[in-house]
Amino acid sequence: MDMDVEIIESDYVKVTDRALENKYYFDYNFKNVYIDMDDTLIPINPEMIALLYKFRKQGKFIYLVTSHKGSIPKVLHENAISTLLFDDIHQTDTKTDYIEPESIFIDDSFAERKKVHEKYNIPTFDVQQAIEVL
Image 1 (cartoon, rainbow, N blue to C red):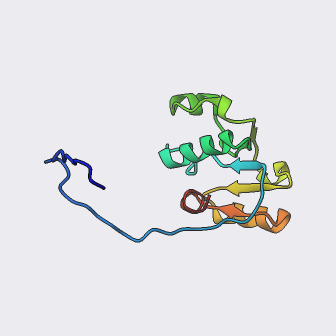
Image 2 (image 1 turned 30 degrees about the vertical axis):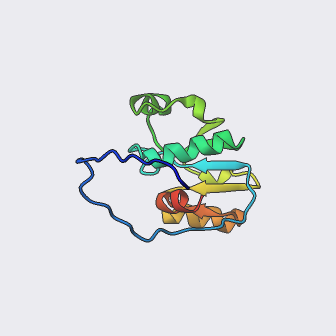
Image 3 (image 1 turned 90 degrees about the vertical axis):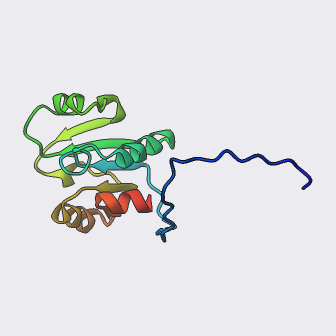
């Protein structure tokens, strides 16, 4: 291309790892995201937080659904997560009572995901699946 090129060497990069990566095409139109708190959102998973902000930017509604017995705003605050990220917070032992159509559900518990899938026939994800697929 007849252009001068300069290279700045770096002594800081010691290893380059090029590994295979999973790629997905997720063909399901959803407007609501229901996510569990304990062991799904907290302890903090930066990739999950980024995914929730991605959903927010896409105009999706985000609902925290948890069976946690303590103060949810306090737990979120202690983990530097704003309650403003969520359109609503449901503190309940019966997560299946709050799911709307055109939704996805993210929870670390297989039993909870199975209940939601059987009742609503919507996509359900564990944390890693959600991060990789969505």
